[in-house]
Each structure stands twice: as C-alpha cells, then as structure tokens.
Image (cartoon, rainbow over all chains, first blue to last red):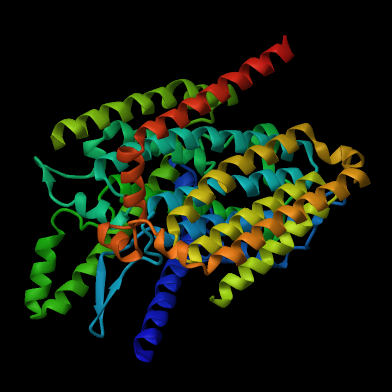
Amino acid sequence: MENTLIFDLSMMMAKILVILAGTLGVVPIMVWFERRGAAWMQRRVGPNRVGPFGLLQPLADVVKFIFKETFIPKNANRFYYLMAPIIALIAPLCALAVIPFGSKAIINGHEVILQVAQMDTGVIFILAFAGLEVYPVILAGWASRNKYSVLGALRGSSQIVSYEISMGLALLSMLVVYGSFNPHEMVSWQQGTLGFLPRWGAFVNPVGALIFWIAIFAETNRLPFDLAEGESEIVAGYHLEYGGMKFAAFFMAEYVAMIMASGLLATLFFGGYGILPGMSTLIQAIGSHFAFGEVGFQNLKAAFEFISFATKVAFFMFMFVWIRWTLPRFRFDQLMDLGWKILFPISLINLVVVTLGVYYFNS
Amino acid sequence: MSPVIIILCLISACLAFTMLFAKSPITSALCLLGVLIMTAGIYGMIGEHMIATIQLVVYAGAIMVLFIFSIMLLNLGESENEFKDKPGIFVLGIILGLSVFGLLAYAIVHYFNQPTIAKKMGQFTPELISQLGGNSKVLSHALFSQFYVSFEVISLALLVAVVGAVVLAKRKID
C-alpha cells in the first residue's frame, strides 16, 4: 500500500517534469527557429554568430534578459504589473496537464497513463484555462498605465474573446462526433482508416478543423492576428512596458500557448498520440528483433506514440512560424469581420451539419 | 478533509475579505476572480471535476472577463472616491449578510446529521456514476434527455434577457 503510494507520487512527478521540461525546453529552440526560419524565408542570414548556426543565441538572450535592470514604470500599478507575466505563464502550463502524450506505459508491473491529470471533463478543462489567458493581456495593459499598452490590451482581449466562440463551436462539433470529453477516447476513436486516409478528425470534419486552426492563431496572438502587439502601430501593445525577464515571461508564455494549442489541435483533429501511418510495421520489426514480451511491446508502442505526438506538435509549430512570415497582419476591423461575420456563422452551420451527419450515421 | 482544501478555503476567505474592503474596483474584481478560482480548486479537490471546470469556464473565463473589461473601458480607477463606504448601507449590509450566514449555518448544523437526509438520497451513488462513465456523461445524459425541455426553456429565458438588454441599451443611445 505504502509502496504504491510512493510509486504513484513519483510517476506523477515524473510526468509533470516531462511536460514542464519538454515545453520549456522547446521554447529556446523555437525562438532560435523563429529567427532563423524568418531569415530563411526572407532570404536573409539571421543570427549566426553565437555557436554553430547561431544555436546558442537563445542562451545569450537569456543571459541578457536575466542581467537587465529591473525597471518598473513610475505610474504603473506595481502589484498587477508584476502579476501579469506570472499568470501569463501559469494558464497555458495548467492546460497542458490534460493533453495526453501517449496511451500507457507499463513500469514495474504498473500501468502508467501518459497524461498528467485524468479528468472526466478533459478537453473542457483545457478550454477553461485557455479562457484564463485573457487576464494577463488585460492586466498587463491596464497596470502599465500606457496608452499603447491599453490599446493593445483592449485589442488583444476582444480578439481572444471573439475567436473563443468559433473555437468553442468547432470543438463542440468534434465533441458531437466523439461523444466524449476524454482525450484518450478521442484518440482511440481516430484509430483506423477512412478509405486510404487515417480516420483523423480533420478528415471527418475538415471545416471544423480549419476553423479551429484559424482560431488558435487568434487565441495565441500570433501573426496574422497579432493585433495586440502590432509593432508598427502600437509599438509592442500590452507588454510594451516590460523589460528583462518579465518580458521573457510573456515571450515564453506565447510559445507555451502555441505548444498547448498545437497539442490540442493534434489531439482533436490529427489523431493525437495515435501512431503515424507506417510506424506499426516499424514497431513490429523492432519488437521482434529484440524479442520483446508483451510489456516491452507496450512500452515500445508508448515511445513511438510519444514520437508521433511530438512530430505532430512540431509540424504545427512549424506552421505557426511559416504562416507568421508569409501572411501580412490583418487590420482590426478585418479581424473582427473575419471572426464574427465569417467564422462564427460557418462554425454554427458546420455544427448543425455535423450533428445531422452523426445522427444519420449512428441510426 | 485534506490540508489542501483547508489552504484553499483560507486563501479564498482572505481574498473575499480583500474584495469587500478594497478601495479600487479592479482589485475587488480580481479578488472575486481569485475566490472563484479557489472555489473551483475546492470542487476539484473533492473530485467534482465537472463543476470545477464549469466554474472556471463560465465564471472565471467569461463573466469576470466582462467585469474587468468594463472596469478597464470605463476606467473606474479614476473615480475611486465614489467608491467610499456609506456607513448606513454598510452596516445594513453586514447585518443582512451575517443573518443570512447565520441562517445557513444553523440549517446546515441542525439538519446535517439528521437521518431524514440519508433517506432522501437520490438514485446516483459515486459507484453508480463511475460505472456509468463519469460525472460529465451522467450529467449531460440527464440534461439532454430527461430535462431537455427545462434546458431549452432556460436558454429561451437567456435569449429574452439578451433581447431585453439590447432594447434597454438602444433606448438609452437613441
């Protein structure tokens, strides 16, 4: 009894560590890739001085961030000013707890489900924490007492609130298909094939997938929807008055939110941790070569599931960068028009169509 | 009771008091947000994930955003003087609040251990719920099959409220 308690606790800690280290460890790589990728897409050289290919540039940036002077504007509301970057990091990290990164591993004869928090509300919990991402934007803008910051905060929060509706409706259409909130059940529903395609949510409900994908760009304040920052118009928007590590916290929060959104997109629409097509033969080959037992096979499968999930997330992260450096920024009225007049009605119609389709196929 | 729940309760009580006595409206609003999040934490700790999540989605994620958004838009921080305590109303409020609290506490203490409650238990026990596939499944099934008429009527009431709000605001603007 005592032993299982310690085992459960250490497994829980290990899973949290994997998620935390994985997410925060990816951030510097993404920062490097964003700058080098931008340079590559614009036929520039990009940062290439620090380390091979400029790979140590993020490290140099971190050192700079840490040793910068702590500066708080005189008129700022000190408490809320300092609180905003903390909330900005907490909310997306909490949401990551529900995204599964594998089915289950068998360690020491115990089944370990590769997901930090097993809740029966699953995906809705992610939505709850995604909803909390508005607060740092509002707080930072308000507490800085700067006109540009307030403008950025107003833009950012109205944008996040508006696109949350289309995002929620797209999510709802997938919940109707899966009939469950549980991400594991969603992934197992997406196993199998649809003709020559894998039975992924994106192929079952392509309109919903597209709307969801567009909406997460707005939710994470990424170009072409980065009106909250809009360097050419309002300098840097809500985090204009932040410097040093406080700015870095916002920066990290943006990437963590991107990882969370990519993970959610992969789980909902692209098979989640379900192994990529062709990998099952690889698993068979490796497993039979080393003569694995049932436990070994399960663990090997879990490892490949993790690799598949990471590949999918990496692909969507690449898309984030690609789209950022391809599309120009929207104007604010265009953004709102797209959100309210195009995406919202389409997602409503899509929800009705999907519901009728599910009713037709189930009866 | 687990110590985590007690800590959450203490924090939420502190936040509630800060909300009452704060001078600036945005502090009050944020403290209320904190209370709501702590309450969601308490729900989560006793295993009611569904209610905890709904609490976060609806109250923390939607309603409080509106509150804080409107405080920011109207820039109420400037008019902190209008937020002064009016002694008469304040005392009345405290008396009313205490009496409601006293009644509730009396009711809970008086009826909590009465055998009648045990006899009136519904059909759902924790074992049955986990057997049927979790709280959210049972709840949604009840909501969309057994109680769907009342569910729809409530949504109609919300629609009426929205239309009413628009009409009232429009008259003011015209």
